[in-house]
Length: 238
Image (tube, rainbow, N blue to C red; front, top):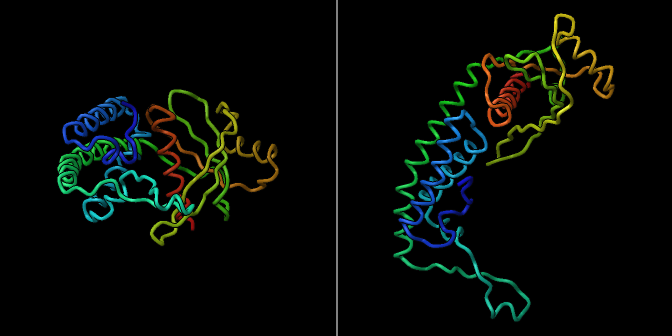
């Protein structure tokens, strides 16, 4: 099982044993992925599902909003769409509460395992500015490299801003530019100079290198960690 629906709790049959089977199958996939040190997309999914369940448990009124809805024939005649709740059954609500109580510690255990792996990977990475630091750091280049390759993957990045719970948060968008070989002659600084010549729209780009001391799965682990390291580093600049 590769993924878990956002509304898995209230989708389809509301039965403790059935939902338990679905959850454990999903967590088995998560476990297998973590054993390969592949963090994403499962780690972010776990965060979403765990927070969702905590919110639902704390505010049971939200559970009703998770249920599927059907059209009301009476309102449809007047060309107005309205919805009525399918579920208004105390027994089913008790079943959902049982499912949540079983699921929360399971999600938490998997989330803790993923967080431990993430922290380990991050501890084996360092982020360094390449050349002079630009005053404008919200756009520039990200270099990512790991042993034993001499190759460096180059990305153009842009920091994005969005609000969540009235708090401004930073996100990041990256676009792959090229892969280049590092050598005694072709240093990170000379690679940056070549980029400036090739892409004149960024005459003085902020450029950062994320260097991993160990080899990790690139797409599923190293690149997501590198992007978060970059966002954190730029937030320090301002």
